Length: 74
Image (tube, rainbow, N blue to C red):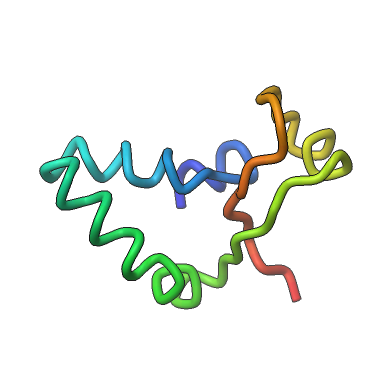
């Protein structure tokens, strides 16, 4: 949530990395992928594929169009 509040979005990889510092990375990676949808529902978040508009809105500098986690405003 801190990452989303600071930047407006977060990637799945960032979530795993942040939690991987507290727990073993391999365990975190597997567990997050299993329960990410439930976590996002609990916090009012959604995962979307970034497009040109979203990349400009969130100032994303990566190549391609990554999946990002953002607040579900609806």
